[in-house]
Length: 389
Image 1 (cartoon, rainbow, N blue to C red):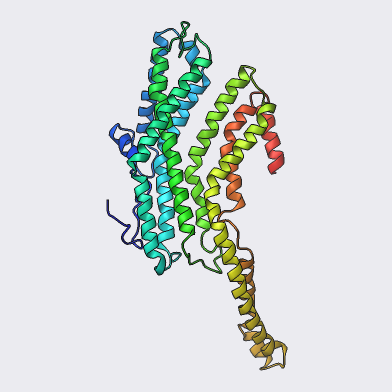
Image 2: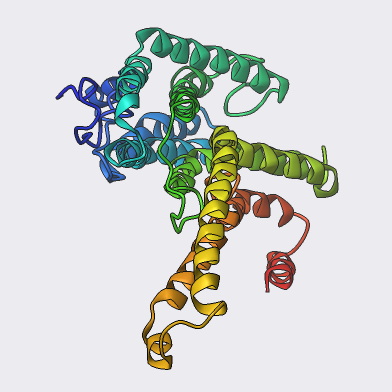
């Protein structure tokens, strides 16, 4: 791969910063790699064949197929969560790399900050390639597998995973040692990707950025960053999907109710939104300071222009009526007023409320399934429509 860190003004390839970590290379070796920008069907089918199909065969061979088929959680994990985590990796990498390239290839980074930017990009690449981080990801996955093993024991005996003799079945061992390790490895690698992204944004916000005073996005040219949380939307949804699956199981066994879970669902959704948009908050001090400086500069400009305009047109009339009709001074005054409104409307964060709302709706969808266990789905949709419309 071409090294772009030495010249940060050079165009970054799509996989420059976020694709090609040790887990990516491992997945490609076992046939689970996905091409940049495409959610391939083949890796998804392979991972289902590795995780879910053996459980189906083993539980059928041991006469516990009915118990397996009624385990909603295992189907959610291996038919939905793992395929989504795998297939969306390349799409997220492409979106994040394009966002980095848009930031570095434009004029937002002044020339005097280019050496610092070069160090920053090199540091991001170092984090991405870290073998220590990869080892930690695998250890976290194995620890999570042991935790899941303990949870399966606590669910009681006589299931497809724990037999009547309180021993783990072959299906149970495959579930923990293969399926859960793969799922938790993917989840941990997504979390590490998010940490790299958050570190990049925080260090980037410390640079002396060249923001544009009259940029129509009302963020000085940073509004494109508000689209970056969509790169992690699939991961965020899978977190809520797993929670929803466990809650549905608890409701079905009369361990809890939707009313009891409501505060937890709200808290979980707030945490997810903070996870998605929180890293962008590091630009708030930058944008607020930029707004103060811009307002000061525009005030000086408006005072100067206003004085000239008043002297020329509102004091002693100069020129003929035809000159007044043909002058561009009034249009320039209107343009100045429009620019001032843009500056006044400069946001404190580089994202829009609509983007937060759309992500809220997307990531909260799994919780509809939880509510639907006690409230008909049609009633839920009517309540949502009455609020939104």
